[in-house]
Image (cartoon, rainbow, N blue to C red; front, side, top):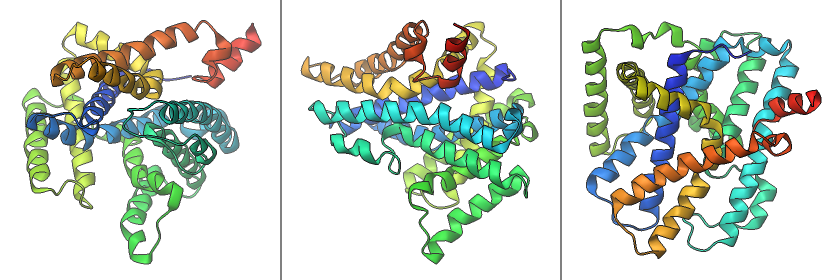
Length: 332
């Protein structure tokens, strides 16, 4: 049973918004449209931490729900994750590749045969599911010999030392490069940013913005060590920011809504934002602000509408939430 944490749910909703926002502005830039200087900086700023925030929260939820022990055994836990991450990964990757191979004008043209290789080469945002499953396997297997923080350190050292020995990790590289942040998430209770005083939170947010802007301007954001520092600072600043805006009941409702539908939004948003971007361009609408607003609404509301419909059809909803719908079908 999922242990509810409203603050963590709101953080997840915020992370969901940032993922859609990041892909919308990246899609506009990749299409060759004119992007204002602030838009370019904002895109780079968001990408320094928003995916890490999602991975951090995945680690936190893994911890508060009882880790692999919640399923009784390591094998059962891994099989559970294989089902619930593997089914949507395969289905949505196949849909994404098929659409990108058939429709002209998309930013990332695909070949229909790419579907045959998704078992080792992920596509679009679905790399996250691929990496997350690998991380669950790593933490589950190694938990018999190490604590989560120790596993996180091993993954961090592996990321930095592997190049010196010519090791690349291949398809599992993302598991290693994001596994450290997942491990930090399992220790969230030791980072109670939300309990700090307001001036500390505002200071943390200010430091994050100023320091990240400086690093982006200098072209240092992607350098080893610095990128992890940016991710950690971005996560902490996000925790501070969300705790401040939760004083608004309306904001809380919006973030909880985004959290509730975060998985279908994550799975489907790029398909619809890309389609809307193509439609707007063909209609001669090139205004950056209009593309941002319509892209965000499209990327959030259409997946929500689809999830609302599929929730009433267990056989279809199975491809988003396998375990839940297996239980529903058995009861029915």
